[in-house]
Image (cartoon, rainbow, N blue to C red; front, side, top):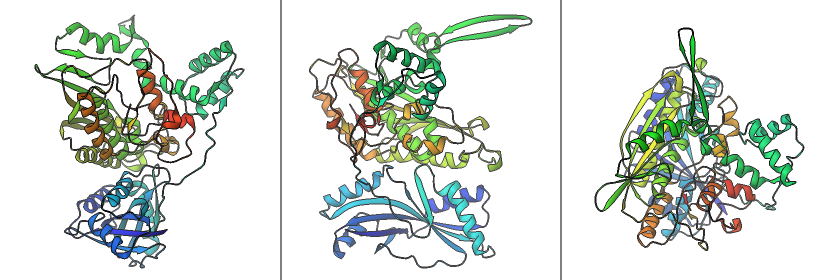
Length: 534
C-alpha cells in the first residue's frame, strides 16, 4: 500500500484563516501577521495517477474555489521562509474521523475502489513579523498551537510534516475481568472508584460491597461499569432527586425546610398542577410530546453538554446537538428545528487568571459555535433561536444547552416491548468513543480532567445520523418496532436496560458491529459511540 498526502488550499480569502488570525490577535499574539489554513488528507491506497487525480478533483477539493496538490509519503516539505512556520495537526489514534469514513465510502461510490484507509488533518502556515527571530517564531508557534490550533485531548501537532493516525486493528482476548470488592476497606473502595473513574462515593461503594458479600461473589467488570453509569449523576440525577435541607434565617430565628426531590417538588409538580390536556407525554420518555392538531403531535427535548464542551468544544457541542436529535427520534418523531443557549466566560480574560488546564473562553466559544453550526448544517436541520451569554462563572465550565423540535403523526410512537422481540442496533458502529462518558460528566472538573477524558469525548458524524432519520421515520410508518430509544449516556447498557427493564433480555455482544476489533465486552456494552438507535 502507498500513502499519498493531499493538501487543499483556498483560492479566495478564507474566512477560517481570518478567524484564526483574529482569535490569535485577541489572545495576545500580536507578532502573528497572517494565517493560512489548509486541509490535509492522507489516503492509503493502490491507485493509478489517473485515479488519484479523480479523487483529488471530484472528492477532496472544489476546483472553482480551491487548488489541490499531492505527493507520496514520506515527502519532505519545502523549507519555509525565515519568518514563516508550517504547523500540522491530526487526530490522535482511536479518535473517530467521520470525514475519513465518508472519503472511503464516497470513493467507492465513484468507482475508485483502491482506497484502503483515510485520515484527515489541518495545515497552518503562520507568517510572523519580520523582526521576530527564528527561535522566537518556533516558540510562538508552539504556544499558538497549544492554545488555539490544536486540542491535546483529541489531537496532536507537529512543526513540519506530520504522520497520520490510521485506524489500527488490534487483538483482544475478549476476556471478562472479575473485580475483587469483598473485603475491601473504605479507603480501598474509594481507590477502586477513582481508578476505574466510576465517580461513586463511599456510601455507594459500600452498598456494592454489601451486595457482593450477601451474594458471596464479586462483580464482573461489565456489572461494575453498568452500576457506575446507572448511579452516575448524569443518568440518575441524584442531586435533583435528593432530599435537600434549606435553612432560612429571619433575624435570630432559623427555619428549616426539607425538599424531597427538586424534580418532583418544582419541575414535575408544575406540569402535574397545570395538567394541560394537550400534554401527551412528559418526564417518562426521551422527549416531551404535545398535541399540535388533529393529525400531528410535536415533541421537544433540551439538555446540556457542558463537561464535554469544556474539554473539546467542537466535539462536545457537536454531539450535544446530535444527542437531542436522537432523543426526538426516540419518540418516533422527525426532527425539524434546533435551538440552543450557550454561556461562556468573559472573552477578554487573561491566561494568567484562568485555572490550570482550562481552555481559554474564546477558544471554547469558537469551538462550541462551530460545533452547533456544523451538525445542523450537515444534517439539514436549522437552528431557529437561542442565546449567547457571558459571565466569569462559566470560564472553566461552559453551559451548552441544546434543544430540538420534532413532528410526528399521532399515535404511531410505541413503548410496548414484547417477549420474543429482537434487539436491533441501527446507525454508527461501536468503538471506544465516550467510554464512561456518563461518569465523566458527573465528575468535578480539575486540572487533570482533560488528560484523562480523551475517551470520554464523543465525536459526531451527522451524515450517519441523517440516514438514521430517514430509516426510522419509515420504520415507524410501517410499525416495524415495539419500542425505541437512543444510545446516549451508558450506551447499550442504558438503552437496552431501559427497554427491557420489565421483561428482561439476552444480549449477544458478539453481534454488535464494531469500528475495529479489540474492544472488551464491557467497552462494547458501555460505549457511547454516537449516531446509534436501539
